[in-house]
Image 1 (spheres, rainbow, N blue to C red):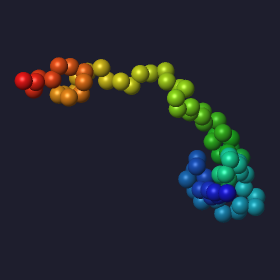
Image 2: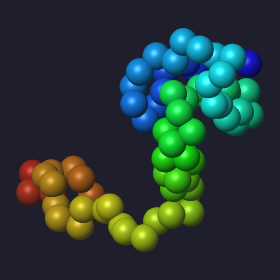
Image 3: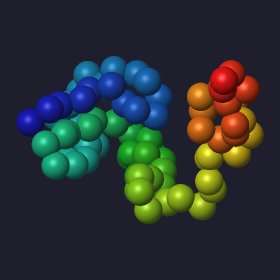
Image 4: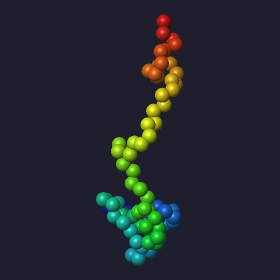
Length: 76
């Protein structure tokens, strides 16, 4: 198991591991300085790459010769 003792919210090192709140996510155990810090972490929405595509990040503008989005100006 991977153990992380740096609170991901505060950035501070957690030293009292016996009394510190923590979560286990698969093979990762994350310690927090406080229950408030743990709750804030758990309130962060989870991203789902491949499912959360509300916006198309494609740039429709031609970026230069050879990008496949316009006729190549260097054709002979």
